[in-house]
Image 1 (tube, rainbow, N blue to C red):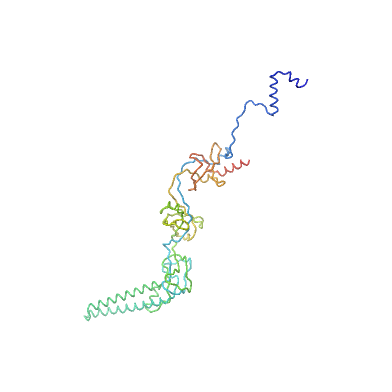
Image 2: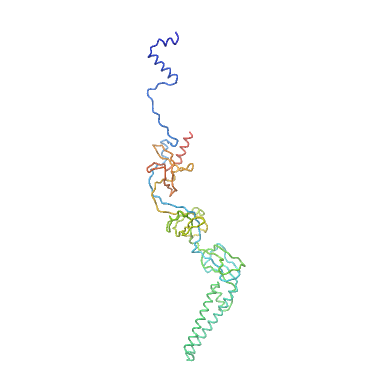
Length: 389
């Protein structure tokens, strides 16, 4: 009896059951007593870490914090113009000797160079004549007083000679002051007065104690009055000068605190206050000049050193997170937000500039979000590894 014959003898219900079993066997499936609901798969921006690894990541709730605004300006060290003097010759003449070089420390009254000049000889002769006239006037007054006591002359004659004496001494003092201005030392003036010895040269004298920062004279050069031959600066106090864009200059005022960093000194930190805000805008750079003054007793700060100025503004409140929580990828900032136990979501955010290691949140997060603030970089590596696997 063939197969078809056997099937024909079977009852309808048994035949239907056998048909179902045959279809299931053909599909390679077996009947299950009940279906199990599938767990939704995590998206590509999610990462789940084992519970043993969770302690490596510190999570904090995002909240409003007080931020101290900070503006960063490129600056430079400059000599304090109020402590800088430009020194030249007081007479026309030829420079016979240069006594100092750039970088030398000098004292007020110290000779920087010597100049030979005919004007110096004429000034010394004028002093000799004034000195002689004053001596003659002294003797004339002495004789007049004796004659007046002897009732030989009247009081009017005595007063005339005393007046001539006063004029003669005034002329002597004027010529003496002129010699000092020409750089004649007191010792040379004593020799001129007592023995008539003319001093051969005039000295270019420093009027300030400090450091020679510029020299514009050489031996044999003809110097004119008013020519700046030397520049001397007192560097015990220096300026830190910066240029701020005109759009933000209005937010800066005299008296604001400034923190400065000098790269040439290994990132040395300085602090001070703004002492000057420019009243004009540079037409070339469209910036406003800012200036602060710092002490430089050790002379470590040298003119034209570069510096970075950070200007503290008024504190403000804003939603902010730690700089360490930020992961930078594809020119965008991201953070990891905890969405469940040991599960974090990779979230793109928009943040402001760092203020004391804090980044103000502009977009992408809400107050109260739980953000990974320590270990975000390692969590990012875990997500990348999971993607590769």
